[in-house]
Image (cartoon, rainbow, N blue to C red; front, side):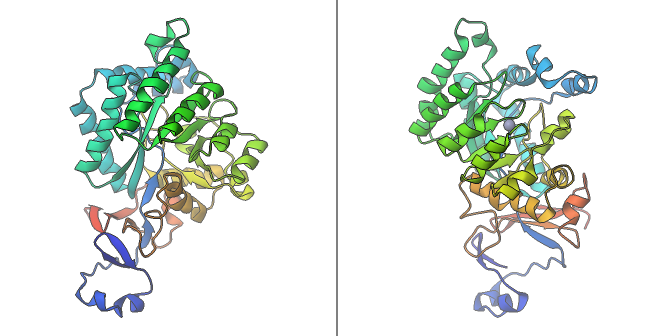
Length: 386
Ligand SMILES: [Zn+2]
């Protein structure tokens, strides 16, 4: 590969590259036969949060379900309480640390959702941090507004509280987020204990009117019908999908809505039912894989670990998993022309692995084989001891 100004100027065999006149003055980087991939595109994360939920982890191991914990004020509302109390500086420092870790595992672009603020000031605080973080470090951050994560506690106690919160999102937050260019996408957690399909529809339509493209958390805990809504609205992505039906699979296969699978959640929660990846792939759906990095259900930054889970638990082949974690994820973020594959004209976003065969990346589960990561041609991570 020949890179110039952060872009892949040419891609081909060694002799083709060496015969190009521009190569004569180029600085050479010998990768010693290692495996080279496009940098991972992690298309679903909850980057900004204040603290882990290790105490809930232990409760889950002892047998409490995710929904039981949520009903007792744990879960998302627990993270909301902690985020509202945290300073922007503390949140930013925590995110910076995570971003460095993402780069160590070969990720070069990630999507980041708000959703642990759930009031005007806190949601805007998170979205502003997405912008600031993008300016302060090399990873590309794609911002999504997830004000519709759950109904916050102060609205739950009011009569018609959920309806009033949906009104706040539609009439105040979505217009403000769009006017300040703080997000590209609008997302809704549509499930039991969160938002209904009709609420999700109203929120996402308001987002669309203000230029925010829809994404959806769909069919994770129950089959709600959110996948059909995602397809109807032309959503960029429909995520989770553990509980989808055959008709949902057919609808996704006929659409350009990406089916984003998050097996880290099921693994961390100890759930046995993973999304039907094989059926989706065989039906012709566009399948992406992402970490869902978040403190409650998937506290990992490791795309290689997600590939391992996809391969062994979802029966996704290694090459399919890599495509899902790169070009398909880039498509779901509407950046398929800039990132997600190693082609001339695209950004030189590259992850290099210390393996002999690409299949060894998921094969060595829980082991980080990433040797070097480049963003726009610049090294952003290099393994220390090799
Ligand atoms: Zn999520």
